[in-house]
Image (cartoon, rainbow, N blue to C red; front, top):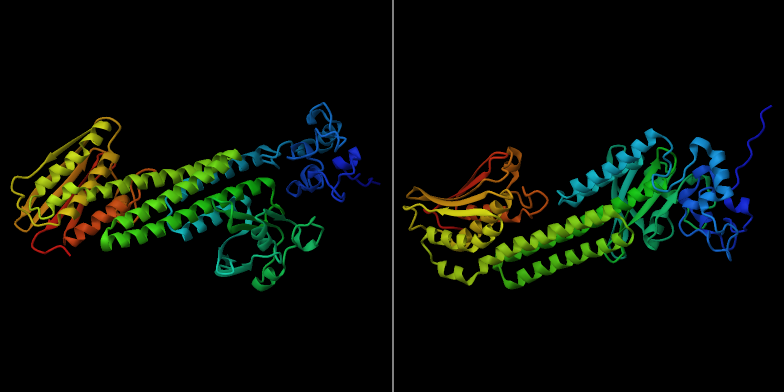
Length: 506
């Protein structure tokens, strides 16, 4: 007859410290719920050496305090002996007990970094949320993932998820009636397992079955992570439910915190883009100094937000968050640079060209503005103006802005040494002339060329707003002209602006 297995002791039982889960003042180990089940223990009871804030080293509080290191403790060696091959030592990659599991954890981290890279190209918040929820399900092996954002007055959590291949709206109140509302209300990660068994959760909220009843589904495990702004205020939550392994580990919490940071940055980016579009519309009406000031203020706010996220990440030593926040800082710094190019359009020297009929004179003026920058970049900047182009009919300020944007883009595209940019003008016929900018930069493939003049689309690797070329396209359209692009990957690019003179700019 096989003997019943002996129940394995937790540290508070072994050491008889009276600081277990039911104590009036339990040890942090006894309340470390994310570690529940590790090394067959209750909460962190058989994982105490890896729990932050444990009472080890505090002789007045716990008998486990001693001069020797935790790894020399009798209880540590007992757990190691009892668990054998299943023994877990570290919190990072907790649960990795075999090469196959280790490979999966590495793949999860690689997937997370891939998400960071892909999100850099997303300006649509809905696309970002879809990408994050898809990756979160894959990384945590969850059945579903929902992003809920705070909206309304009073604010409630609003979101959407796919249920039986149909989009389903979700609204959850920010209160203690549900685990999700509790997480948002208290700005706290909530990790629940065995939801319908109704076991004691030590003060954490019980899952509200009304959600399952309303949506005709079942939730067995749930992890909810708050999404915070730069001031650590909750602006939403991201949740995953029904883990394939039956529960969400501390590793899963770590990954979900990173996804929450991605969403926080995406929300800030979406806010900035929305404000920038408003500024562009205002600028189109009057292009006033007030519009520029407003745009700069928004960029400054975004920079402050990114800086705050970096400071928080540095304090927590979270390299992934630092990387994500730095990317958004880099983009906003680039926006300041692009904005300065537009500010050149307010150069008083341009006023003398307001009634200009000489395209070549305007080209020579803009070339002079960029010569110093070209020298600093080791780029040869030259002009080749056609003899029969002038006089011409055109909108000087608009053509000026086109030249500023195209020359700036070409300088960015040039190699680190040996770069060359040439601006040229040509007469097509008595009704049309051409302004061209050519460079020996990296060039573009056909897909990039096809999308180049869409708003916010940019071919610059890692920077650039994509606003400049959209501006160029709009100006050429006002001249009833067209743009031709010759470009091949590795062979540089040539932009030709065909400007009609027989129709007045609109």
